[in-house]
Image (cartoon, rainbow, N blue to C red):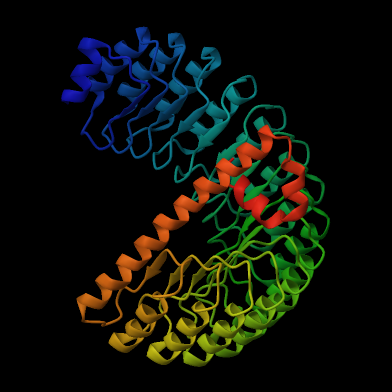
Length: 474
């Protein structure tokens, strides 16, 4: 409350104010709203997880009608219903600065979605809208979809956990066919099945702006995956596709893997918990042999086991783009670790490898440790909950005496016991991290100097890998 009093009494020239979980109710919201009416510096206001209801929102909404600086307002986890959404919608009709509005985990319902959607038809400043977990249903999705047909400013829309189903997906899919500004759409946890996937897939075939699409935690099976895979064959903008916790299985993955052989834009694919098994891993491994754009692949909790690990490891020996591979909770034993270790000896692009919650043991850790003696790119390795014990930790500690690239190593829940060896490992990781930061600074300084000397193109042609590494800062 002291922070609030400072804001009200002194009107500090702050740009950001975080009042997360401060037990703020309607009366306090009224005082804050009064300050907002005249404040000319605040751009970000976090009121998440408080007790603000419709009455408090009415005060804040009135302030938004005259405030000319606030750009981000977070009202997540309050007690806002359709009436509160109506107050905010009215404010957005005249407000010309608010760009991000977070109303997740409230109770605005389909009617609240309708009020906001109507405003979106004319509002020209809001670019990001969070409406997840608001029980808007398929009708609320319909109202928002209609707004998207004419709205030309919204770029990110989060509608997860709203029970919109296949019908809601159909409405949104139709909007995606004509909308030209939306780049991120989150529809996770919405009970969307194969029919909804079909509608959305058709939209992806023609949509030219969506880059991030989340369909995780729905009811999409192999048939829905087939529709989506077909869309990926022609879509030229999607870069991140989240399909975690569906029911795609090995046949559905086969369709997606085939699309990856020709798709040239997708960089991140999340298939966590889809029962793809060893055969599904084989299909994806084959795609990785030719795919030249995918950088992050999440395959945890898929019963991939050692054979699946072998297929993926073989692909890693030739693949030159993948930087992150997640295989947690995959029932991989020391044999699977051996296959992956062999790939790490020659692979030059993988920087993050997740192997947590498997059965690698100290023997599998030994194989991985040996690979790290020659590997010069892996920076993060997750081996938590793998029964590696004291012996496995010893192998890693010895490897770190010469390895200079690994900076993050997760060894939680491994019954190591000896804290001295943990301290030794952490000290070496810290040294690697510090040295890597120094190298990055040196690379950037070199690049700046080359720019001054007009020799940028020279180093780019001489060593494009170093050049790209330098550019990572920018």
